[in-house]
Length: 515
Image (cartoon, rainbow, N blue to C red; front, side, top):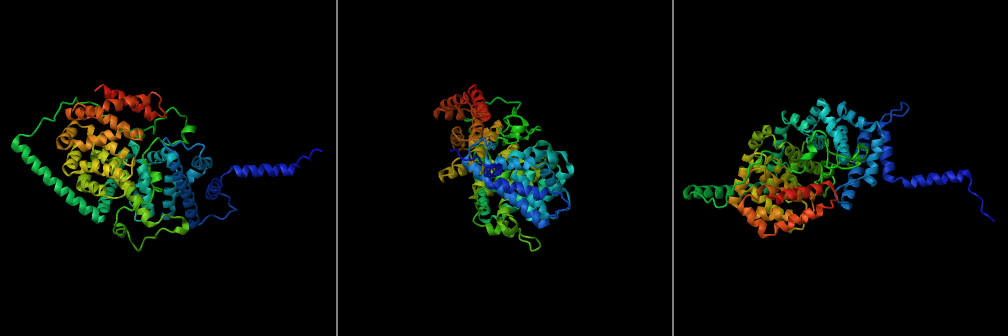
């Protein structure tokens, strides 16, 4: 006898259970929190400031943790559609009132901790929402001015996250053009110098390092002046009217485009701006390395009894973590403006060379990486390049890279250091100086980066050799180490590219062979 068919009620219950099972608990949590933050029902009591802070931080904390797990499991390009982090961001996107609500929190008279939580949450959405953040800052001058003010505020949380938000906006040239002409860059330069000064051990090492290398440079100049110099390493290099930019500069175009320009807006909203370097949004969940052995010295610079400290009860990040993040965001902001003439004179006044060399003595790979990226942008100024070389900073870049590799931190600095190589290669006068001084370190690192797992690092290394093979010393090194074979391998891989970056890499490799 056939079993009785289920009643309509039991069938409906089965459907409900199935739907709930399909919804991840974190999706349900983020959905509920976002609805509570945007509800406007007059019958429902308004949320208190503490409740708003807690809910904003809970969403941000969830996104940060899931994004970190996603990056551990995946390799670039980081496409989030179909993954939990993509689903969570989609939940927020589908709430039409959510992002306008966040902008409103930055515009109204909310307390600083509400604004800090809002900035933190916006940063957590950067992997798919960076264009919207750039538009928010670019289209509204008052909002940009407000965020610049937040980035120099006395409140540690607001200052930290607003600096991060500003670092995202500065990826766009039109935003950077505005900010570079106000007093924000000078304040950020002073902050970076203050951080470097507070790292007493690293600062002492940097001062001794610079003094020793300046003495060596002085004696070298005297020998050159007395003996007429040795010009055997010089080689003519054709001048190029258009210098190649770093391979990630495309992210600053007014259209905020990436390597997948052909993708529709709907699809692009669920993808990252193919950026293999840790973007500002994901810095928050990196392993919490100490800045140095003297963290307490740095923290002491910010201690103030009038400041409300972060509260774990409201899911706010601890103060030590905020200090670390603020340093990284500050370096990102300065790097994004580093190519501007307007910032160069103030940077020299604030001892940018000493600051860079101090941070390169840090034991924290994140600080080193962000410092290298900052350095790559300042290399647009020849005076900076020559001064860095005289102070030993150029050789230090390569030495630190090799030390990190020897310590097992393979790949962490590949892209940031490759950007420095590209910066050096953009000026034949700078390369000529480096070749005369000590080319071995530079060339061995450049050759290592040709085999980096990072597509962008390989691309910058290829461009480096494209621009410098006119120097006999470099050409001899390239031939001795089978550089031609390496370049041909890159072209072979590019015949079946898995990404636009690999396709561009193969094209650059072909151009390299023409030299």
